[in-house]
Length: 585
Ligand code: ATP
Ligand code: MG
Ligand code: MG
Image (cartoon, rainbow, N blue to C red):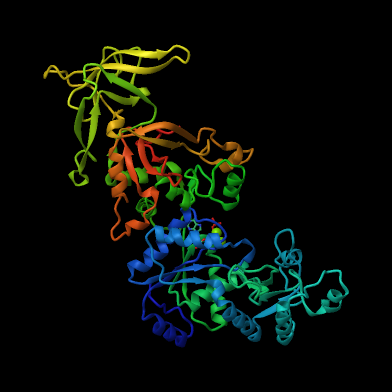
């Protein structure tokens, strides 16, 4: 790409632009603050900020806030937070509404150069004018040729607020001819009805909305459309490369047209394909339904692919970026299975987080041949084979806890963990244990305690076939640490919930969240928590690290992060991803 572009019609405008930018690349990420960003947006963020960074340029975060009815303060804040979370620093944070006055002035100029008019047609009439197979040929509306002086007056009239009185009052009726209600008048561009591209068929530039704006309050009554606003604000901000998704390919013609007829600097629009994740829903309307019907806990529920949800689940920002960077930038829209995202996250965490022993469903194992007060400190590396991660010590005592799934009442030859008469290794402990007997609650049929023998008498013990996770059950040694663990499985049953004939809400997986309230973790968790964030990010201010940066691998169970529901009394952990694909239900 030629920076600054030689595509500019007017060389003087190009000169001004070069003076303002010094030839630097400028891009912008322009979300509409009408909801939370999702994983698809991370591609847009990575492309805009990444392209600018690569070329030594700058990227704006620009809120495209021209639809007051849908926009809320909450969304402004969350969007900025997520951009920063992904590690990008906006050159400036701006708002389309910052430019309402400049945009208004250019609208008057557009009328003045004979390229816009006030139209009073209904939506129905406009549809007819656009023609089509059933509707017949395209035609101009009766207002198109009105004198520009008249359009200018009408445009100003669109700004006039109705009197603050009831609609059926005499006062209202007396003044009725001095103002318009929404829908009664709009500003349309006077483009080229002969052109084959619908983006040239007299697009709407301004409409009336009786709605207070989150930032400009009730100052304005008319609001510019996307088609009018976007290219002009790009121009004001001296954007060099206006990068957008491919559904705007057709809009490039009106983008260029408007900049040129107004004789302002014209940036270069380039398109890239949207990123869509399958096996979930991304659309705001649908996520709203999931939240409203309590299928999920909120916009940041870890089962969603909103970026606040992904963050809460514990996915590191670096993994999100690695995922989108790996997809590359093409003009094709990409449909990616959610499992491929998980795979990218897994690969990222594998290299970067420590490992701990955690037990989801503990049963006590009493080692009968050890004395009551037996205490051994066992050195456990945070990551086997990675000395940089360091190691820690865990207590080993007479009673330990293992997972219920690691013990069987009846042994079988293809089973390698604990059973009566069978021995198993305890991860990093010196000797294996052999189960001798067990207690069972006759009512529930559940095993309540296993008894075992520590095979420390003979130095020639047989090397065990398998090692299991364990933690000491020893309050005197502050072990274990109790935790509540949430495991997430896919939120929907099918790969494309949108195609469920009964609607996506009927496609919900009833098992999308499993909670283990009596889980326990080894004492090494304290150090992992203190040393967070994992992975450490260069230059990151640790004081801002949220609970989700306490990340680790629970051996044999998956990757976990601390949830924001954690209190002083309760540690809540989320499973970020399983250790292997298809391990979740
Ligand atoms: P949605 O309807 O999903 O919210 P949108 O296009 O209305 O999408 P905006 O808030 O306008 O959302 O998006 C800001 C920027 O992010 C735009 O440049 C848009 O093209 C881009 N974007 C939105 N969704 C995706 C996606 N799935 N993949 C890539 N870029 C996207
Ligand atoms: Mg949007
Ligand atoms: Mg949008």
